[in-house]
Amino acid sequence: MASREDLMKMVRPPYSYSALIAMAIQSAPERKLTLSHIYQFVADSFPFYQRSKAGWQNSIRHNLSLNDCFKKVPRDEDDPGKGNYWTLDPNCEKMFDNGNFRRKRKRRSEASGTSTVAAGTTKSEEGLSSGLGTGVGGKPEGDSPPALEGPCSPPPLASTPSSAA
Image (tube, rainbow, N blue to C red; front, side, top):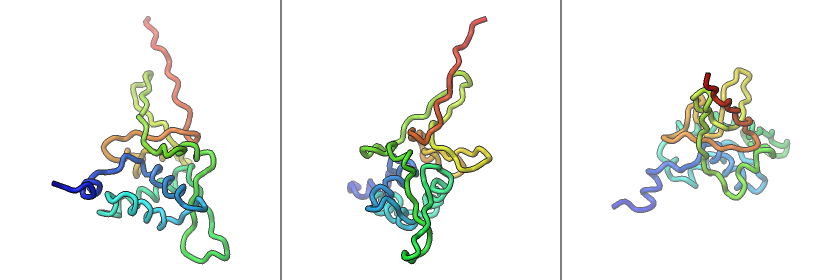
């Protein structure tokens, strides 16, 4: 029989990469972390991510660079070291209040029959979505792809009532 610790290493945590990043940043005393410290927090907090690093670390970088909830902050001149710091946009902090880091369900547009993810905005001019529940390339993370909603989210799509003619 597998121990609880062994099970924790096998089961993927129910958090989006954006939620993991937000947890890491909010755990820091100054509310800012370098990329390597974000990686360290994730691996230390969730043993699942200690097995293989390449895939999830790429997704962390992707979310940091494309999600408007994360802001890059340059190092101070008296702070030696490699890389910038990352912090949460103040408009997005409320999304993670009270430890609410769990993913939320996808919304389905009744008018078009297509599913849309209520999520964060993108920094890309091409309109690529970097939603708060997506992995690399806008593809959903894990087996269930719901995303977080919040102040950095676009408004929900309005559904039009179908008319019988």
